[in-house]
Every structure is written in structure tokens, then in C-alpha cells.
Image 1 (cartoon, chains in turn purple, brown):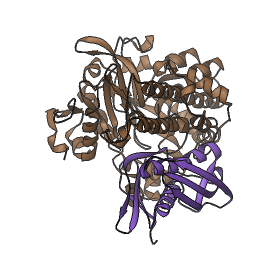
Image 2 (cartoon, chains in turn red, green; image 1 turned 30 degrees about the horizontal axis):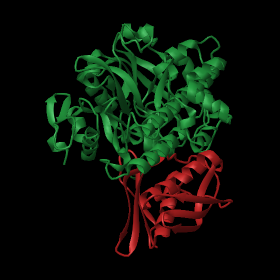
Image 3 (cartoon, one colour; image 1 turned 180 degrees about the horizontal axis):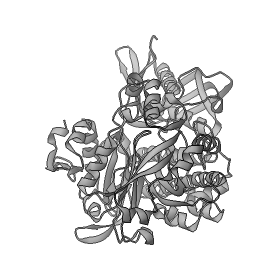
Image 4 (cartoon, chains in turn yellow, red; image 1 turned 45 degrees about the vertical axis):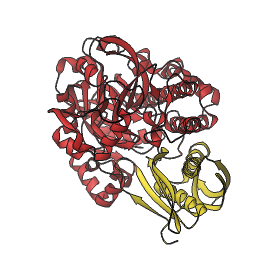
Length: 136
Length: 471
């Protein structure tokens, strides 16, 4: 996968499209786009966390998956570096994620929330595309 | 194309007439210049709002309106309590994001002498930025804050009686039950009371630069040439999580298909889920009032160390993102309505009993911050706004350009140059400040002119930033 995500114009907020050759990969790319919005430079790989998320369709699954990282940030001071393992079964995700303490990084950007605004997860030809607007 | 449907009603007002499945017309208060700048999708969002069940009179847009998600930023709507709805996406994620203004008797010359140290001290004292929590409070205490708001601060000697009176809803909105707030939301709030957050949140040291209305300025306690402190922040992760939780619950119960926009999911006000969201939202509202109070307390203490004889008084604290029940005259009778303000400020005129006694003769102060390097304005509320916009006014300059645009188009050098030219010092990253510079916002004076000319406030004072801390 050459480019995992791109950022698009949105006046108030941050909008991105993420790509993947399968559903797991497009979810992983979306998490990386969120990480990029919060902190542009690399995050060290010091802590591992297991997460489990459910949804009703791919959109709500993506919403809940991304929101988990905002929760980890505020409640557990955890900033994502990368996804080590991700498995999606129906509308359920199990993943192992790696990152570091958020307080080790200066001047990170705040993402207030994931939104449903203009959100989609689609298969276009042979690849998956997800679009998300973040409230920043 | 929504914009081409808009008709100019008078010099400062545009209307999209009711058609199709719209329940009410759209009304927006703009100059021609501002009208031309507003994105077409923003009008589309106002039209979507007009389709919500139980909406009354108009789907209203303020002079600083811009594109949001679901509900536009700078949007206002009123709902009938019997037939109406409540929507977590409409209120927004940053519940009771708002602004407060602290006036002082410190001459600006005295402040300028020490501003570097004071600004630096502020940064050290008030936790800001990502993951930087403050003191970690217990769940029991935070639950108390959710019920009592600023009253908790008063009981613990972080607030005066006057501070409470000078806060919208006296710093405590009734009907907040912490049992309606999830554990996840609570966990996000534990380390965040008294913290600024990041993004567009700020603490600005400003000088009262110009007075337009001497008499009212005096009532508000604003004196030319003195220092003021403006604080902008909200309910932090706790509020964001409350919004997310209920967007999810409402979707699960009602399904996403019937909403005009997935972000505009709603529940009837009278439904069980609607009531639960309203209660949880009120918890976040109270958390935010108390949060700004705790920040102001620290700033007061800090100023006292530098100027032991100084006086500081809270002019007012106002919510920007809120849903609440207010009395408004509709069809010539006074009625309780649910008002949603998303990126809008309440602006009651004279005689309203919701505002402090000292302001009741003139109307409430309306605080409208500019961007990082442009002036802020203090207006006074009007009776006319009660007729036109459910007593709502603009809440800021309004973003004109995206963050992506800002980073592509601007550089740190330009930001440094403009701050140097205007003699403003900054605490925070210059790189982050690129997104918040005046180039990314609308012309605040144009927004104020449109607001005032439309009758949604009268100018009282202009404040100029001299030292800025961004989150």
C-alpha cells in the first residue's frame, strides 16, 4: 500500500480518507491517520494494549474503534504508535496496539471527537476506502 | 445548491424560504461580504436542522457561521417541549465550551513590565495540551462537580458568591444526574478539572483598548487601559465522551437511516433516552463551568502574587455549545422552549431575571473573542435579539480556512511577524499557532458589524491581546 491516507479540505475540522486492500488494513490506516492528526512525528513503541470494540455496521465500528484511542489518551495517557495486530470478525474488532505515554510528547494536537459527518467505509474496485471527519 | 435559494430580507438578513420537508425557514445574519464567504454546505446544514421535528420559527445562523458536522457552528434552533427533539450531535462534542472574562484594575503598563514572567507562570500553573492532566480527583468528587458545577468551587473556596452570580445559570444547571454519565466519560474527566486542553482553547491577557459605551462599560466593570483575562475552554474529554456515548445509544435505539444527517441523530425530548442525554449533558455543562472557574482561581492567585493590591472581578461566563430550557415569547405567549446553541452566545437584553441584578438595567455582557492576534469585543444583549434569534449572538470570529489550508499557506515566520508587529507575546508552539492565527479566521470586525447591525447586540468595548497562551 503506497499511501495509507490523505487529508482533505474542511473549514473547521480535519477530514481524511484512509485506504487498505482489505477491511483490517483500512481500519489500521484510519487509526494511523488519527495518530498523524494528533502527533506528526513518530511515537515510541513502549507499551502494548489489547482493545476490543463492537459496532452495528462498518461505520459505527470505525467510529467506536477510533474513539477508543481518544479514550486511551485521556483516561490512560496512551498515545498510539502503531497497530500490531488487528482482526475484524463481523462487526467486532480485536486488536493489539503499541504506543507510549502521551505526556512524553510536547505540542500534540487535540482531537475532541470522531464524528459521523460525511463518514463512509466502502469498497471501491479492489480496495477499501474510509472517510472520517474529526472534531478538533 | 442551497445558497442560490437564499433571499436577502434586509441588509443584514438572508432567508431560505420553507420548502419540501423543511419545517421552518432558515435565517442568517450576514453582511454581503460574509454571505459570499460562507460555504454552500453550511447553508445545507441549516436546511437539515430546519427539518428536525418540533423546531420553531426559524433555523437560525449567526454572523460567524461556518461548516460544522451535522449542525453548523454558529447555528441556533428552538424546539417545542412536547413535540421537539434533543440531539447530542447538535449540541456538539465540546459541551459547554465557553468563554469567561475577568476584569482587573491592573494598569496595562504595569502588566507589560512583567508579562513574560506572568505568561510563563500561567503556562506552568494551568495544565494544557494533550494528556497533561491536572490534579487527579476521585470519582466521588467529580460526581459532585457534575451535580453542583461552580457551586462545588464555591463550597471549596475556589469561587466567590459573585463569581456564581456572574456565570450563566449561576454556574450550575439543575437536573444533572451523574448516574447518566458513563464510567468511560468519568474516567476521562478525573484528571481534567482545571485544565485548558488544546486546539483553539486559550488564556488571553488583554487590554481594554476602546470603550464605545461608557455607561454600560462601567456597569460591566471595564475601564480603559486596564488588564483583562479571557479564558476559553469547555468540558474536556468528559463532555466529548458524553456526546459520543449518546450519539451511539440514540443510533442503536432509533436507527441511523431516518436522520437528515447521521451526525444529527435525535431522540424526542420526552423520551427516556432523550431525558437521560439531557441529564448527562447537564453534568458536562456543570463540569465545564467549574473547570473555567478553577482555571480563573489559579490566575487570580497568580496575579495576586504579582500585584498584591489588585482587584479582579468576573464580568461574565457564557456557554457556546449547549442545549437548555429557556423562556421565550412565541406566538405572543411566554413559553419554555429547548434552545440549542452550537457556537453561539446567549445575549439577553435588559430586565431578564436570568441575568445578575447589576446587569438587569442594561442587558447581559456578550463576550466575543477574536483570533489570537485580533481584538475581542464586549457587546451588551438586546431585546431585539429575543425576537430575532432566540436571544443568541455570535461567539467568535469564525473560522474561514481549514487547518490544512493554514499549514499549506502560512509559515511560522509570518506568525512571528504579525505578533511582533502587534506587540503580542505567545506561550505555546508557533507551529500550532499557525492554525489559530488571524489569517485562518474571518475578519472579526466584519462579524461584529453584522451582529450589531442585525440588532443582536450593541458594542460596549474592544479588547486587544497582549499575551496569549494557547492550549
